[in-house]
Structures are given as C-alpha cells and as structure tokens.
Length: 214
Image (cartoon, rainbow, N blue to C red; front, side):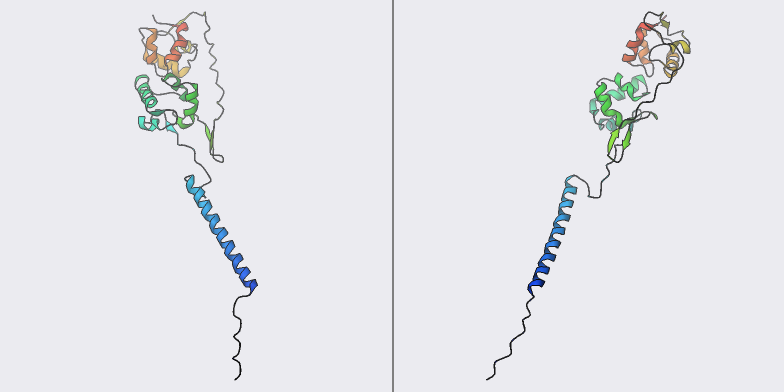
C-alpha cells in the first residue's frame, strides 16, 4: 500500500515571526508613550497641547468688590475689607502706590499684588507670554512741573488760602493733589487733610512741617 502524501509546511518562517514580533514591539512602545504623555498632562491639570500659560486678569482697584480683591494673592479677606473701607472714607485710589496708606500694605506686599491690579489706566507690569511670567515695566521718569519744592526751615504754607502753585511747592503734592486740597477747603486743623482724596496718613506726616491752618 502506497504511503500517504506529506502535508506542506504552512507554519510561518522564522523571518516572518521576527518581523511580527518587531512590529508588535513598536506598537506597544508607541502606545505606552502616548499613555505617559497623557498621564503627565493630566497630572499638571493641562492637556499636552497646552504649552502657553496665561497671565492673571488684573482688577481695577477702584471698581473691584471685596470678594474679587480677596482672591488676589497677598490680599485676602481682611486686606480686601481695609481697601474697601479706605475707598469709602478717602475716595478713589489715584495710583497703586497709595495702597501704602492702607493697613497691612508694606513694600513687600505691594510688590506682590502690583501685577494683579490696575487703577484708571495707570501702567502696570507687562506679561511675558512666552515664559508665562510677569515682568514689571520700568516706571516712566517723573515730569518736572517747574515748581520749586519747600525745604525744611522754609516758612510753612497756609493750606486754607494758598494758591494752586503754592500748594504744588509742598513735598509730594502735584497739580492733581493741589486741586483736591482746594476742593476740600476749609480745614479746621492739619489733621483734616486726611480726608483729601489721595492724601493718606503717610503723606500727611510728610506735609506737617510745611503746612499750617489759619
């Protein structure tokens, strides 16, 4: 009886098996890489495509409410309350620098909150969008009004009768503050100047040697 014919060998060749193993390894490597990128993106609260960080929105110091101000880094609830009370008693802020007159605001705190605030168009730090960091602009040079300022030992000025130009001779007083002083007259005492818009306790202490009320 003749032997049955042999069946052809249909198993893949060693070369094909190696190619299939290599393709599988590449696929798994790509898959793991995508999962890793996605995991790191979620870990930092952003998708992998989000590569530009955004600068914080700046608040108008005169228009923002207590709740909004309290969210600013460096302010909080108590300082927000103090800012609001200052606005109600002293009037609107003329510049961010006037925060020095608010309780709790020293140089360190002022530097911390400055990038987040704006006052009626006053220049604020610019944003470096490429780095996502805040970089303060250099302050513009002060413009001279041509008025000679008083020095210690000079005769004091009567703030109830002084002209606009005479008031501008006072240290720290320009045309805007001089107009505010005139609008708030008469004064019964030097201490009454703390109700003038823009003049806080610090400025008033600087003015004391140079003013009288008659």
